[in-house]
Amino acid sequence: MDHSRDPCPWVALSDFGGAFCMGAIGGAVWHGVKGFRNSPYGERRIGAITAIKARAPVLGGNFGVWGGLFSTFDCAVKGIRKKEDPWNAIIGGFFTGGALAVRGGARAMRNNAIGCAVLLAVIEGVGIGFSRMMAENTRLEAPPPPPQAA
Image 1 (spheres, rainbow, N blue to C red):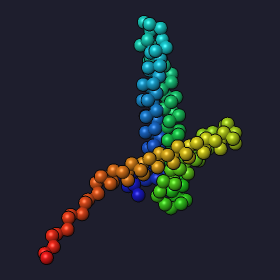
Image 2 (tube, helix red, strand yellow):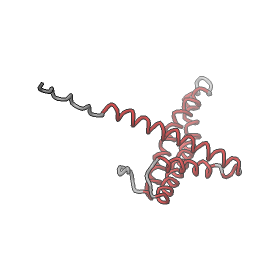
Image 3 (cartoon, rainbow, N blue to C red):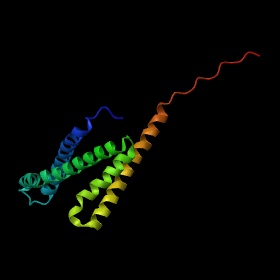
Image 4 (cartoon, rainbow, N blue to C red):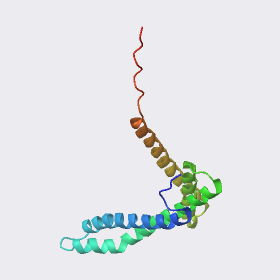
């Protein structure tokens, strides 16, 4: 169990804030470059700043909602299953993808739920594989056996 994180009711707020910041910073970089490139020569700096002010908070909000919903569903699944394993993240991703696509109808909910669950399964699988790969490098080797007297 990961004790370095906040307890489950508070982790959703923490993850919402972290995801919002990540989306806002990434959105500022992305839309700043995009606004700079799409502006006429001589107005590029203003174009970049305008694009950042218009779009970076929106992207931050989108990331924040995704992070908050995922953490909420992940905590709910942990509470129901009473287990701490990768399936919690996969199931939480399934519910998150479905919840974010509610306005698109049942087909969109199904497709987004499956897509999000697959994405989280890949992320969890890569994380497990990477941790196993790194654990092999730190494994202690057995010392050679002592010479036997004949």
